[in-house]
Amino acid sequence: MLILTTAVTTGALTLSACGSRGDDTKSGEGKSTVVIGLDAPTTGELSALGLGIRNSAQLAIDNANKAGEVKGVTFKLEALDDKALPNAGQQNATKLAGDKDVLGIVGPLNSGVAQSMQQVSKQNNLTLISPANTTPDLTQGKDWKQNKRVRPFPTYFRTATTDEVQGAFDGQYAWEKMKVKKAYVIDDQKTYGVGLASSFKDQFSKLGGKIVGTEHVSPDDRDFKAVVSKVKSAKPDLVFYGGEYPASGPLSQQLKDGGVTVPLMGGDGMYSGDYIKLNKKAAGDYASSVGKPVEELPSAKKFIAGYKAAGFKESYEAYGGSTYDSTWAIIQAVKKVVADNDGKLPDDARKKVVDAMNKVTFDGVTGPIAFDKYGDTTNTMITAYQVEKGAWASRFSAEFKKFDKS
Image 1 (cartoon, rainbow, N blue to C red):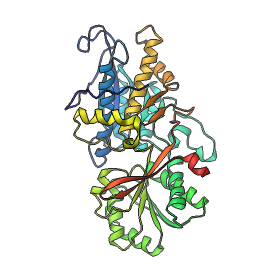
Image 2 (image 1 turned 120 degrees about the horizontal axis):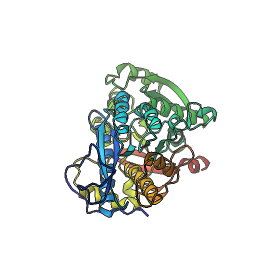
Image 3 (image 1 turned 180 degrees about the vertical axis):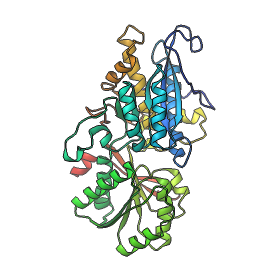
Image 4 (image 1 turned 60 degrees about the vertical axis):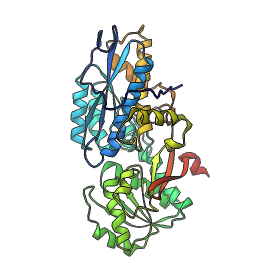
C-alpha cells in the first residue's frame, strides 16, 4: 500500500546535482544516495504543467526519505528544464545519464521531447517514465495502427494512457454524450497534437460523425483569423483541437468572437487552469485528461493534503498525481533491487531497476499502478471536463474499453 505523509518539508525545493553510491554523511551515516532525474518545461508557456510535475516528484522523494521507504538509501531530485524543446530534452537526458547516481528519470511532459530522450535512455539502461506522454508510437512503435505493435524502447514507461485511448474516448464522447454530428478538426502539427486529432477523427467517423473540415496551424500561432473564417463556413457542431493550451485558448476566443458559437474540445494538453486565463470565452469548452480528477479519488486525499502542506507556490495541475506515481514507481523498483542484493545497491543497478520496473505494482495516487508488456499503464481511465464558472468541472469518467461497449 502506498503511504503518503503530510508532514513534509516546506518552502523551496531541494535539488541535487549528484550523489554518491558510498557512505553519505550528509544523508546519514552508511546511507547511499540515489538521484532521480526530472525533465519538464519549468519555464516558458507550458511551465504551469511543468512546475506541477517538478513539485509532485519532489513531494514523492520527500515522503520516501521521511518514511525510510528504502532502508539505507536517501533519494535526491535533479530537476532540469527542457522548455518543451526536443533538443533540450535530449541534452538533459545526456547530462543525467552521465551521473552514475541517477537511476531513473521522471518526464518529460511532451511526447515530441520524449522521442528525443528515448534513445539516450536505452543506450544507458536508464529508466525513463513519463506522467504525461500519450503518443502511442513511444511504446508500441510507428506501425501500431496496423496492429504491428513492437516495444522499441524497453527502458521507457508511462503512467498516462495513450492517445489511441484518449482520442477515441473524445470522439465517442462527442458523438454519444454531446450528440455532435459534424466536427471541424484542427491540429498544431506536433507529435502529440497530430496523433490526438487523428485518433479523434477515426473514432468519430467510425461512429457516424462527419468531419466537415481540417486545418493545420503552428503551435506558435496566436492570430487565427483565416482559420475562423474557414470554420464558420463549415458550420460544425464542434471544433476539435489537437494541441496545447497556449494556442487553443486564443483560438477558442477568436472563434467565438468571429461568430463560431460551438464549443472547442481538446485533450489533456488543453486541460490547464491557464487555458481559462488565456480565454475570456472559455465557458462551455471541453477537454479530456488521463485518469480521474484526483480531487474525486479517495486514494489521492493524502497527496493533496501533503502537497498543500509542502507550501509549493504552484498548483499540481493535471499531472501531479501521475507524476507522484511515476516517481514512486522508480522508488519501488530501487527498493526491490536493494532487497534482492542483500540491502545494497548493485554495480549494475540501472539495468536491474529497468527490469524491476516491469514488475512494479502498488496502489498509487491515481489508482492501481502497473505496466503492460509495452511499458504502458494498465489504467485506461479518461475524464471529460467542461469549463463552468471559471473552472474545469468533470463531466464523465470511464475506462475507454468499458465506454466503448456501452
